[in-house]
Image 1 (cartoon, rainbow, N blue to C red):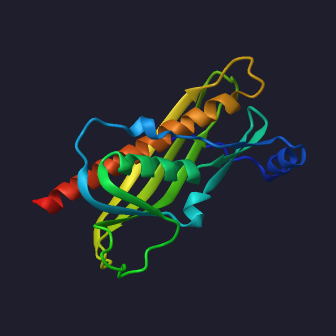
Image 2 (image 1 turned 90 degrees about the horizontal axis):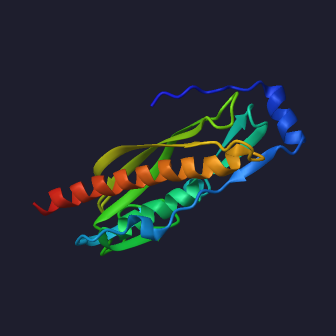
Length: 203
């Protein structure tokens, strides 16, 4: 998933900000996207998402669109992980903090701690109808109530969406979808890994 990255000169970044050519992208996900007609796994899963995760954002300078994009990724990724877990596990709680082990009894069967590792964004340089691409890498560490690490996963997702010719700013339409696809892939990978872990624990 190697993606070419345009590194803008500092003066361009300053000019875009001063000129007001900045925009915020807030991707969204819905619970219905993760619904499955399968039996849920028993157990209590706790998802730990402190402020730095829930408010995580990434800035990208788009020379082709003359925009400074701020991608607010934390809230949508939190929602996606929660919806994905709720679709497959009996009980899921979201906690806006880091876990402090040992957890108070009875404690969750799985304590899940995600972290953003990297974000890569590629935007068109010449033609607006080229792909806007967003690639995410997250770490996911899973613990038991005593603080023993049960699993460590690397999650990756990449979304792409072609820009629209004639749209005032093609990124306004394309980047939310690219972010959405990347976030959903990450959440789907997370829940598959956790289902595998839960299944192994039961055998």
